Length: 306
Image 1 (cartoon, one colour):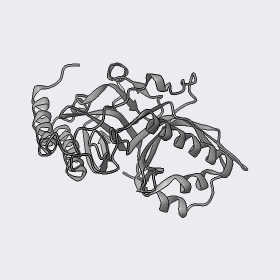
Image 2: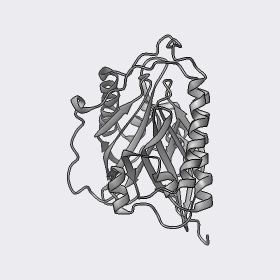
Image 3: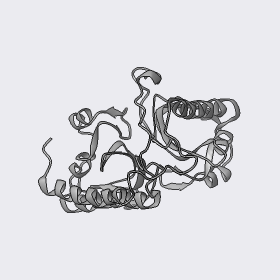
């Protein structure tokens, strides 16, 4: 797909702004005490935390499992982003069995932030229980002061039962990042990443086209759309025409960043024509440029009369 030159120029300007955040810190800056490079051990511990989370859900119940694994500042999408702990503390135990398994995971160079994603299955129980529900989840995990992994974002999509079972993670095929060479200011980098998302939003408001977003997709991006199994790869997503039709406009609400400033996320609200969504994006930095490695849209039901 051809990219519009004016849009790319706008991207370059904002990427250059973000790059100054990294340039401001000398390349020889020391890594803060306790900040180590993400390793195979870190990645495996992240994946095992997700698997243990699912086992607890199956054994003790959904509410119990989430309250045991959500961070104090966690966010869950229902469908709008809300406080995760408050949502589960104020809800009764769900009648049913929710299980899932990670089929892909990645971690920051600092080893402090990572994400997992994979299929889930919800089997409701009780009188009049609905049919089983299927979909894909995305969990953002952050290391806590006590060294444990906790979920800071939980979001997902529903889709029909998968046609085939996804393979498990193969750790010997997972690329592990190199140790960070500097210690950027995470707060400044987070602001820069949100600024890039705002810049894309401004470009989309002018053109009305989703190409302003797909132009920054990584080649191996994961694209999650409601009622569809995930598409892996920019080419597959473009060929399937997964972007909702209509003029695109979105508003970033918040985001987060790894201590090593190479992995982050943003989320907000998005309108495409007459459809409303919450969006969630995971970003990965290569050099001075950020690319979207996971892009998810979760539908927001329309209010009556709207």
